[in-house]
Amino acid sequence: MLKRMAAIALIVCIWFLTDASAVQEMAASPDKVIGRWDITVQAADGASYPSWLEVTRDGDKLAGRFVGRTGSQRPVQNVEFADGQLSFNLPIQYERRASALVFKARLMGDKLEGTTTDPAGKELKWTARRAPSLARRAAPRWGKPVSLFNGSDLKGWKMRNPNAPGVWEVKDGAMVNAPRSTDIITERKFTDFKLHVEFKMVEKSNSGVYLRGRYEVQVQDDFGKPPDSRGIGGIYGFIAPKINAAKKAGEWQTFDITLIGRMVTVVLNGETIIEEAEIPGITGGALDSDESAPGPIMLQGDHTQIHYRNITITPAR
Image (cartoon, rainbow, N blue to C red; front, side, top):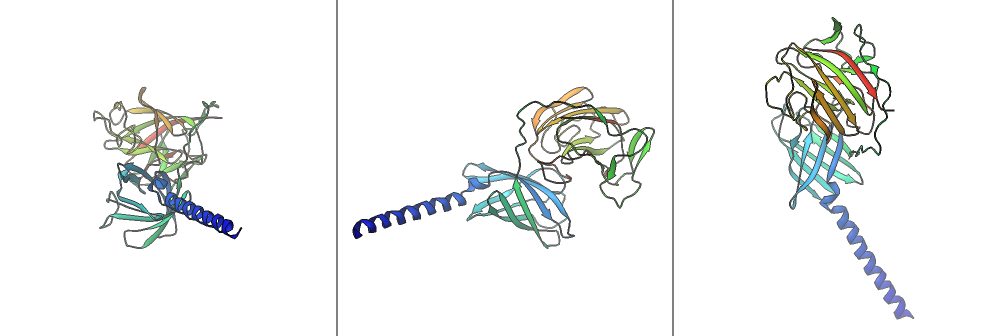
């Protein structure tokens, strides 16, 4: 009897050790961090800003791409994951610093918690959650169109930087910004919608229409140039238009944009330039990285002067 109990105990012990080893090995597997991550970085001034990370596999190694506070997506370097710890670095894009950016984190279930540094070398904490798929089970049912701009005042809009008064005004029925001012944001938030926007650029214009405040459709003086993901009509840094349908600066132009989950269609001046393409993640300059939440329409005003009018949205019900 004692021999039988000892044998059973030995089997249980072996099973436990084997099972624990398997669990530990699974937790340490690089595949655990593969996927898209919505990041929030706690800035040195006490505020926070969004970023985005996608980890992929390249043969027997990990690879990926990253979107910072500003700019476009860029490849990450030296991606490593071992003992539950993720580390990667990336080259400077628009950051004013002397060295590459380095990120480190620990995987905590479906969450990453880690640190990086600001340009002065001060440690910043960051967290990340797996990005939602945003897949829709059924086609949307559209509500009634809603005017977001009445042509006479800025009711229903607010400044991204509330300490920059008077930087947007109404002229001749259009919203116009002062160059190098701030972005302007709708007070209402939306999920899925169809958006109509008319805009007029000056020479060398640079602006953008942010969908849910997170995904920038680029507005830029690109008449006659090859289509580019960072050019007019592109989902900035992610999706290039099929064609460049832009007019010359000084002419009124139109966007008709449909956003359902992550799927976007962009029509520029009557030409479909992007059709039901998936937006991988947030673009630089986004308000936040909470992709599962509704968000506002934001018009970029921190570059050159831009004119917007006849802004209408048709939300999904």
